[in-house]
Image 1 (cartoon, rainbow, N blue to C red):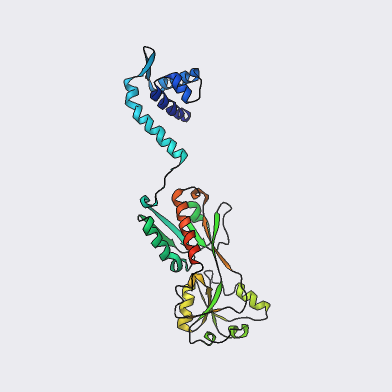
Image 2: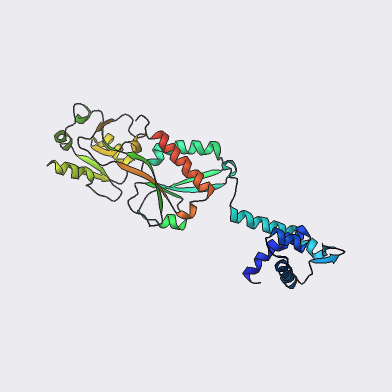
Length: 301
């Protein structure tokens, strides 16, 4: 059977419904001779007359009666596939979504996201994956549904949407000298610090800003995550420079201060592959994540 013959199913469904070549032709916006030729093709493929004369009308054969419901179901399924689902119910959704999230997202927004999903989509599960390397293979291959990070590189087809802007702040234990008094550039640079970089970098935009003022800081420790930086600020008495929103849940009991130099804001974005663009479930999840981050990004820290 040639693939183009599959289109005959829609015509067969209408022929069985109308019981008339002329009636079927009218519904399919075809001429009666064209529909008659289609019926001939169907008869040839099935080896059955399908419709036979009975007085002035036509009646289906036993074979036609046998396949009527099957043909109707096939055509309806095909219509739904091509038109897409008109109704989407999160409450009935059973699916696991993988979110590759930047350090701090889970601790800052994870509980709110889980709470929101548990209320409207009790059968949905989340899998959080670490950032690791900045590649888009996971998005392309479907192993990652959403990438939540400061997106620096992406494939040309990857879609991104801004979630919120964050700023860097300084964090010290309350007994640290910088916990009191004005934090000037000179005082800030006098104390050993922690650099949080998953690539292991000791310097970044902050160091460039200090360099422009003829100053430099001493980075004593490099860690891969912001939470580790905050922990060491507390335990080792060092100065940690971390994003404000993404560390708000781990800075309790510590002193947070504004940096003495301006640094570029950090934009945390949502990224996904275009193959999920019109997936109702995926679109719904993106809306939930965006709403949670929008409502929380101005919360008191």
